[in-house]
Image (cartoon, rainbow, N blue to C red; front, side):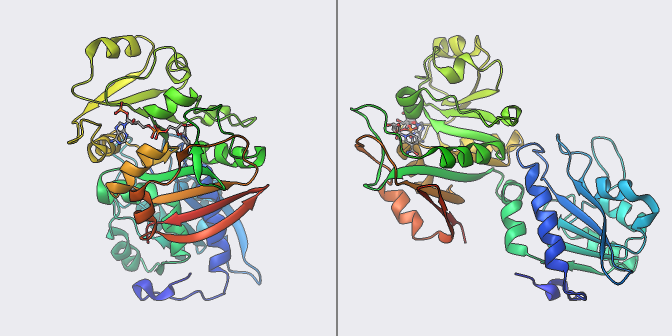
Length: 382
Ligand SMILES: NC(=O)c1ccc[n+]([C@@H]2O[C@H](COP(=O)([O-])OP(=O)(O)OC[C@H]3O[C@@H](n4cnc5c(N)ncnc54)[C@H](OP(=O)(O)O)[C@@H]3O)[C@@H](O)[C@H]2O)c1
């Protein structure tokens, strides 16, 4: 949805702002999971001086968070940026880089003589936080904030949540059978989804900063929690296990593979030191936070710690116990519920606990997608 008047600036003069912003959003989404603690921004530079607009450059924030998308696009064209329209998914930064002390994107945009700026969402970070508009207006560059703002907010949910709440955004993904079960405690493992749905989940993993599960899932399934799509194996994010007493077996696959993929265990200050030694010897990082009143990992503290480590987006894959506890603490920002219509096996672990069911009433369902035989439903915090 476009909101051209968000800052009282010129509306979409030529009727194609949404089209170019859609491209910028698609570009930004490509590096999700690679740029944290920075946001993955997309930028498109368009020459509107002729009869038809011409895309002259595109940019994406590079792995590691620098250079920013605007810089990539502007440097690609040099003087052709003069007078062009820059579409960017997030308000450009306005302070000098603390890392390389280079100019801010706001400085670069002004120096390049960009003719017009179209932004999807404002950046609450102190590095931006509305400092740009005054400088752009001073430089005579019209700025329009709010083009496809809902999509921009989705793309940058992790960054915005970390800046405003001090924790990463949490996407909870759960699969269930048509009978509502997420797993089986007593029988053989319940296979819930088909191959195409599994590939889609691996793609989602590749776009997260971290994958998180509770220790119950490690004990039941011994998962790898990596990305196994051909060509995207290197995009496996940090793996996180929430485990109050360090019950994660030293022989589990997340632990034995910790040398290849960073693996963190969030535990309590009371967890046994001997278990920690066995896990750290294999390359696991053990992070201790306070216990809650039930003696379990305090989830607000744990997520706050991840925020201070720069994690912006956690893809939580369950299980149901952790999902329910996150829901109870109001820590779920997005919920992806997959109904496996080709489930094989008998389940006995209900997917949705009471707190999660309650929380779902407060989330809004914004999309549904049929993937092979399986149904994906997407909820988000309104
Ligand atoms: N369908 C799906 O999407 C899906 C996904 C994952 C798992 N599963 C299935 O679910 C079953 C396992 O379920 P589960 O619910 O036991 O797994 P879980 O949610 O992965 O793990 C639960 C454990 O996490 C630990 N934990 C630490 N702090 C916690 C906190 N604050 N709140 C909640 N838990 C905390 C607890 O153990 P401590 O108290 O020892 O720390 C708790 O027992 C298996 O059958 C598995 O196959 C299904």
